[in-house]
Amino acid sequence: MPKEIRFSKLVEDSGKPETATLWVKPEMDLHLQEALKTNRILTVSQHPGTGKKDFGQIGLHPQKSAIYLIFPKPLPRVPDVRIVGINYGLVAEPVPGTPVEFPANLQTTSKRQKANTRPKPQLRPKSPPRKRKFVVTVERIATDKKTFTVVAKNEWEAGKKAIEALREIPFIVDVSNVKSKVGKITVVK
Image 1 (tube, rainbow, N blue to C red):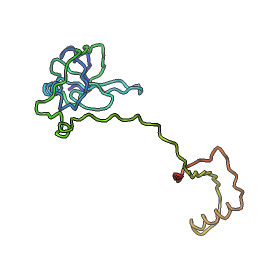
Image 2 (cartoon, helix red, strand yellow):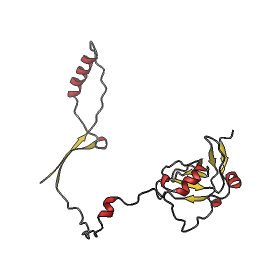
Image 3 (cartoon, one colour):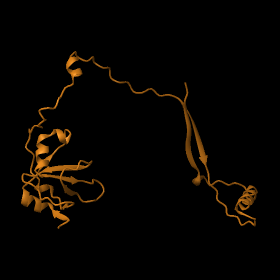
Image 4 (spheres, rainbow, N blue to C red):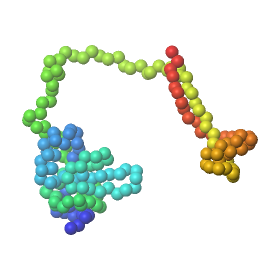
């Protein structure tokens, strides 16, 4: 059982696909649902800017950065297969003006929308947000590592002796190692 199928082989067997755009939820698009039931949809995962090649999966797999192709004939029913070698030159140009079909039982307007038919008042354009004053506490953290050799009974006493020895050495800060961290921010009223 092949784990990969070339896109050109799919086009050869199932015809030139057209792109489908998900303007509405997939369950509301009758054309897409019919193509899904007859196994004619291919989801092409795209990875722009990563250098990864596009690949396809048979069926509808909604995701970001994906396009959906609808074939005129059913696709093979092979589980967990990757479609490789995507050639967008083999995709048919979409027919302009193809309307999206909605199910007959879909209620497009709510009762509230029907009852409220008066025109809405014109809104004033939003003004840019005004600037305010803030009090910001910034903590500057410097790290100075020293290694000491001490004689002690246990780790706790060794740590205590190392801190005592450290107090005798001046603390010299290397400015390139200082990190700044924003702490509390309050609004001045």
